[in-house]
Image (cartoon, rainbow, N blue to C red):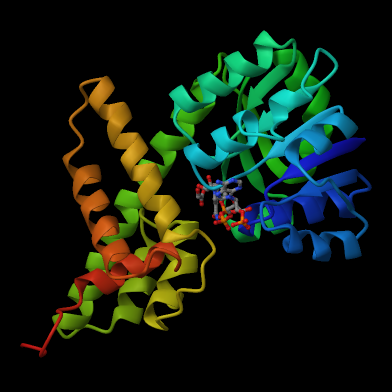
Amino acid sequence: MEVGFLGLGIMGKAMSLNLLRHGFKVTVWNRTLSKCDELVQHGASIGETPAAVVKKCKYTIAILSDPPAALSVVFDKDGILEQINNEKGYIDMSTVDADTSSKISEAITSRGGRFLEAPVSGSKKPAEDGQLVILAAGNKALYDEVLPAFDVLGKKSFFLGEVGNGAKMKLVVNMTMGSMMNAFAEGIMLAGKSGLNPQNLLDVLDLGAMSNPMFKLKGPTILQKNYTPAFPLKHQQKDMRLALALGDENAVPMPVAAAANEAFKKARSLGLGDLDFSAVFETLKPIGPSSS
Ligand SMILES: NC(=O)C1=CN([C@@H]2O[C@H](COP(=O)(O)OP(=O)(O)OC[C@H]3O[C@@H](n4cnc5c(N)ncnc54)[C@H](OP(=O)(O)O)[C@@H]3O)[C@@H](O)[C@H]2O)C=CC1
Ligand SMILES: O=CC(=O)O
């Protein structure tokens, strides 16, 4: 199977490598074109523009940072719309809001193309291991056709119906995750400041009802102050922002998520946006001379 792949960030690089490893022919494009070189060493071809990738490939997948990026590769010069037609399918796996996804869907389908949104749950390691959870919605026939690719990229794919449902599900999941990360960070800080050994807290949490892979993975790295990005904090804050807007539209009070969003915003204001989202822990430290 031949696929185009747009976006070689943390997720896109791991996912496209995974497709290559499993025998897919992959044509890659990235805004910073030099990032394609490593993929070429693993057998990928390069498309000079998103339009060139779509011209060459029946199916094109994208995973890009945010709504402006997702819209740009579709609508801008040399974008997808220049080559989309009734023989082509476009699959956007970026985390965006339902409105952005719907705009893209309308533009693609009005030119005869088929569209699927398919954001993913799972971070760098699950992407490397083909263990993502895929939250697809849109054209069901296209979903069925690209399942062989989803089976390589993920451990489970959901088809959630009309365009927008995948985006909404992803935002609900990440809103929950961002709130949990803040509670976890506060717990670790409180344990340490009140004279407990934070490692003991991790051990206790891991044995109880709150045990989960995220605490297991991020607890030790927070204690080591290792914030090498797997999921960049700026993207987690974008997801909180978009989830809060979804709450706004639906009149759902979300005080916990709103507080978590403020913490991520504070982290960004401290210059931590490119670090892992667990770096929100750093916002809990007093700024200036330490006090007891
Ligand atoms: N990392 C994670 O754990 C997960 C991330 N996601 C979501 O997946 C998406 C990608 O995340 P991730 O790979 O971590 O992000 P990165 O920041 O590592 O990569 C972002 C990608 O988007 C591209 N990009 C940014 N702006 C533009 C633009 N205006 N036009 C074209 N391309 C652009 C970047 O290109 P360039 O190299 O030129 O900057 C890069 O390829 C995000 O929506 C994120 O929320 C979902 C699940 C997990
Ligand atoms: O979007 C991030 C993730 O870990 O899922």
